Image 1 (cartoon, rainbow over the protein chains, first blue to last red):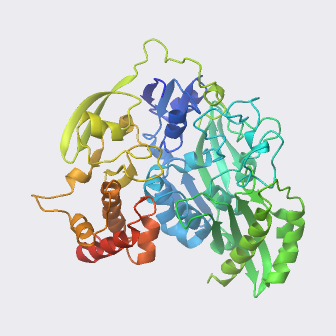
Image 2 (cartoon, each protein chain N blue to C red):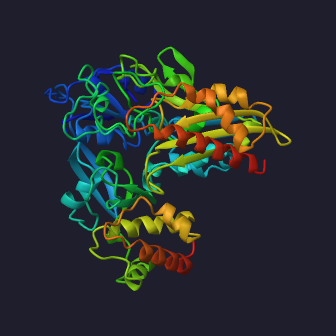
Image 3 (cartoon, rainbow over the protein chains, first blue to last red):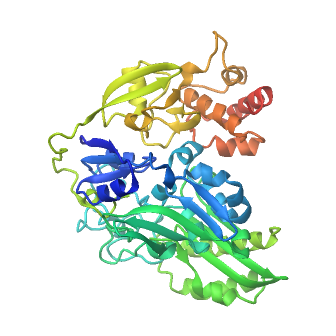
Length: 329
Length: 180
């Protein structure tokens, strides 16, 4: 690890200004940044500790919705009574993330800013990766692509986004509050992440000179009847192969409205808006759900080894919707 | 969070140094197992290496050093955390408990005794992390069933695969000490 200077941000404007300085990175939990620095994925010359900004650590719930401060820890959000009651998909996604130790450390803002688990991006030896070194190529194109995206990838990057809770937040229409020197701007979570196109080094629309302040989630009957299903290669402490966050509003046994977001299949949480439209007014019968999903999956573009994710994702969505449908609301 | 800055896109091989006058050492005041320490440390050092190398507390184990195995688990202000992923500067002003701080007056903690009783280790390298994690798991109220114990102990990998005995030991200790 390269030497770096260390300081503490006394207030939010100091933290915002720090991110505009070349070579400077903010640190909260450090569960991502410290690994990046150990691997040489990032080489900051200055770290600014933002853990003292307690105004960014609150979790507040009122009848309109939930506001999660960027410094709230994953475990505290997962345990929060209102989150568990009114936004169960958020609590479920968090409890299926990482490990209890990491959840005690990792901040919600840092969770959104985590980067892909693509083995080429994380490699200890330097391999072609346009996310890590722009212009160096994408080793996954000719390499192992089993874990890679089936939606939204480009010929410059096949990586998926690893956050679980971002998928739940996407399904619940969460909004990211971004602070900069001018004030606060709000970005829908689904628009917070960028598709790789020909600039895969940029994951999100957060610029230098900006920090995440909070995440807001509107309360709704949908959010109350939400569920997160994660499919992975071991039972716990593993990233998703495929995950599905769903939110349902029922009218008797019929679906009034459904939201669906997928994880593990795209460079960002992937909303299935066409399927959502097709589901409205329909039933929770497996065959009806499967038919409604078809149009959304028509645009999937599997690579050599990840075609299995299409069927796996469909089944995950169907099971998640049926589980949500059975939940007492 | 400064992902759009040049931090993310600079070649790793490039020699980079903080500007003149920016200190890369930091004075850290930390209480470990009740004892106050004041250490001047390189900003790069982790809490794990500080415990082991600066304070000689080698009970906390260094295995993956990447937050993937749980062997380095300690309690920071009463919460279980990974010392390999914690820069020592971030532990400034905190209370840290390690495996060396569990026994009281020569009496093993109930969890330590339970692991011995249930033969819940083979090589023992993961054991301090398992114990620190389990003490917190019980305190958090996450040891209500075998399934819950397995889920909330999943951050501690045991290569010898003593998991059934570990679950049994945690369960036994939980019923003995309750949520305390």
